[in-house]
Structures are given as C-alpha cells and as structure tokens.
Amino acid sequence: MKRIKINTSAWLENPKKAMILSFVIAVVAWFIVATVLSPETRQVISDVPVEILLETITTENNLEVIGNTQHTVDITVIGKRYKVGALTPEDFQVTASSRDVQTAGTFSLAIRGALRNPDEEISIESISPTDISVTFDTIVSKEFPLEVDIENIRIADGYMMGTTVYSIPEQLTITGPERDVSQIARCVITPMEEIRGTLTDTLKTQGKLVLYDKDNNILDLKSLTYSAQEYSITVPVYKIITVPLRFTYTNLPAGFPVDELQYTMSADEITVAVPAGVEANIESFSLGNIDFRNMDTGYTVVMDVGLPAGYLNLDQLDQVTIKFETDDYAVRTFTVNIDANNVINAPADYDIQIVSTKVMNVRVVGEPEIVENLTSADLTAVIDLANENIVEGQSTVPVRIEISESGVVWAVGSKSAVIRATAKD
Image 1: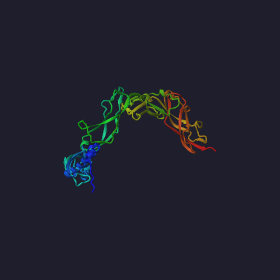
Image 2 (image 1 turned 180 degrees about the horizontal axis):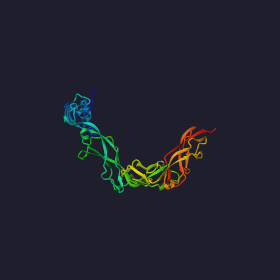
Image 3 (image 1 turned 180 degrees about the vertical axis):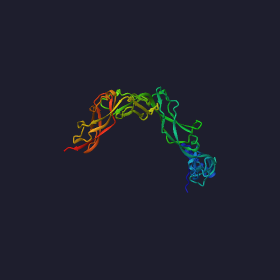
Image 4 (image 1 turned 90 degrees about the vertical axis):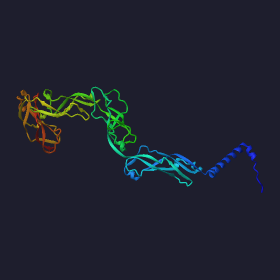
C-alpha cells in the first residue's frame, strides 16, 4: 500500500495555509470539548416574559388585571452546551394562573415554565422569581356629567355670561377598575389655553379633562378609558339692553287717528340679555296684536311677553296690562242698511244678492262730540268678498262698518250678513 506523506512543514511555512489549519483544529477541539469532555452546561436565560392566564372563575367575577402586566423572570437551564447556548426568551412559555382569584385584591401567582419545543437534553433547573404579585379589580363603567371651569373667565361691563355654560360632550362614560372609578366625584373641563382679557362675545375653545375626588383633590389615574378624548367649551356671552315694548292693531278702521287713542301700560320697556352681536338689530319687542274690533269703553287687555328663543328676560316680566282710556267716551247703537252697491270684490262668475238687508245693534264708541251727532246715514255696511270662498247658494259673510265722520270714533264687534250667489250663464 502506498502511503501518502503530508508535508506539515510546508503548511506551517505558508501563512494562509497555517490560518486554515488553525481554524480547523479549533473547531475540532471545541466539538470534542462540547460533546465529549464537557457535554452539559448551566446557563441563565434572562427577561423571559410571563403570560398571566385569566381563568374562567376570575372572568366570571368580572375581574381583570390592573397595574403592571409586564412581568419577566430569569430561567436557569441545564443541557448540551451547543443547545442551551442558542436559547432565547422566545423559546420558553412562562405562565401565571389566576385560578384561585375570585375577588378584587393583590395576589401572589405561582410561576410555571417550559420549553415551547420540549427537548430531553435540556432541563429547567430553576425560575426566578417563583411567583409574581398581581392586582385584580372589577372593571366598571360609570357616566358622569361634565362641568366647565369658568373661574378665570371675565365678562366685560354691559355684558353677562349665559345661564348655561356647556361642554361637548355633556356626559362622559369612564371605564376602569372599580377602586379608581369610585374615587371620582367630579369631571371638569377646563380651557386648554389661558383666556385673556374680558369677553364681549361668545367663547368657543378646546378643553381638557380634570378629575376630582370628593375632597376636591385632583386625581391622576392611569388605568381609565374614556368615551371621548376631545372636549370643547362654549361660554355664551349676552349683551344687556333695555328696549321699548310695542303692540300693533288689526282691523283698524281706515284713516283712524290711532295716535289720539290714549292708554297706559303696566310696563312699557323691558331689560333683556340677547346673544352678543345681535343687539344692533333690536329697536323694540312686540307684544303682539290687538284686534280693534274688541275695543270698547273701559277696554283692558293683558298681553303675554314672548321673547325669541335664546333671549333672557332679566326683568322676569311675563305679562303686560294695557288699559285704554275710553271710560268717558260716548256709546250709541244703530241699525245700518246694506246696499248692494257696497258689495265689493265680488267674483266675476257669480251674481250676488243681499239676503239680509240690515245690520242690527251696531255699537258705536267714540268722543262724545262726534258720537252724539251721528245718524245711521253716517254708517256704511261694506261686504268685501276678496278673501271669501264663494260657492253657489246662500252663505254668511263678514260685514265691515265704516263711519264717514273722521276722528276718534269706531264700531265695536264683528258683524255679518247673508248673501246668495248665483252662477252666471
């Protein structure tokens, strides 16, 4: 047999070959040590995460882990050097069970650990720590009204803050451990930025949430969740004005000198607060209409004070009594003939016939020097069909009494007459 002779001197004298030879010898030596001379070794795997297992009995009592949930342990293993040297925290499954937890509180949970992929050549010698302290509590939700902090908000002279300062949202649902939620007495929205100067217009700004306990201490609770994360504040600002109260007449006789009609009002002006910015458009407030047909001697009417929505009645004036100074006026009663010539605005497709030719008991009120000289000839019964729905046949229509004499004199009440309409061929 022919022997192959290796020239080791040539290898050692060549630097590159010497380097390769050294590497091979080192690998072989390590393999021998790791597998033959020292096959097993002990190693610590640090910062292995712990999974907390919530058992059914715990969840049925509506308990959850609060506070710290990021626990880790160190695991000491024994095994083949080449195997344990490659282990990482992700190769282990470490758990702590809540099977004995049925009420709120802090409990010590035992640690259990194992390799995710079991290997007979690797064993766990110890786990440190052997247990962890975990706090459980009932998770509850509670709705709170949101208050607005207006302590540092100033309003200019002649203005006032609205009675309702509000936030969006107006209610807030807070969810978290019962021990934390139960501490909350007030939820306050405070302006995000400092409000400088005095306000002359409604303020709208972003706000932030501040929680207070029953002793008005600020709470700093990290374990809560909220139904809203953004908040806004609206502070209505009103301008205070005093304006006259007015009323108007309906069914006023044509040409009637209404300015000569004297009356007194229980209140002829009102002080109100109106949304800032609209005051320039307000010259007076209307009490409504008075039907002049109801005007008689000693006539008094009570009118409600109604303001537009959002206006504030600072005088708390709900009604105004208006008394007309007509007690000394004269009164007479007349019968007035109805003339077909005084039917106006009749429809073109009908012939109109007067059925009732007289208006009885027409009550006339006015200044004595005018009323005493009136005759029936001074009164005219006018039938205006402009706004009437005329159909063929007989119907009742209103009659307007006009007085030829000018001055403070008028007919009281509503009158009517019967007409017959016949369609034209």
